[in-house]
Length: 137
Image (cartoon, rainbow, N blue to C red; front, side, top):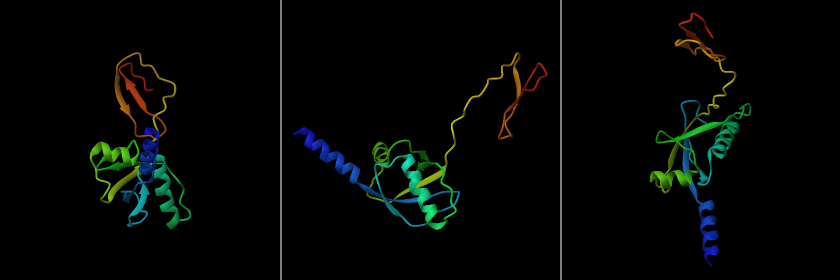
């Protein structure tokens, strides 16, 4: 008997929808609100935003995005996030999206025999460090 109630609750959660408006400092796909399921996660939200961009620009190249609600990074479904933060699903939700940043991959470590005295990260290809042994790495 309990299994039937749990299944009905899961179906109800998966069928819930919320009105959202996507905003960004990059490029707005549209200024209209849309209704999406509350069980979407970051990857699926990226698909929605990319589809919005592609509908207005056939040359759009899909890319991953990260999403923020009230300045906080969304790392779970909209349903769980809104529940954890006490956000009502009855009102329209404004979701900001930003380009996703790939996690840093450490390559070969460069050991220093002395204290590091300077770091320059102005190049996108490498990070230059200097130390008190007068060597740059």
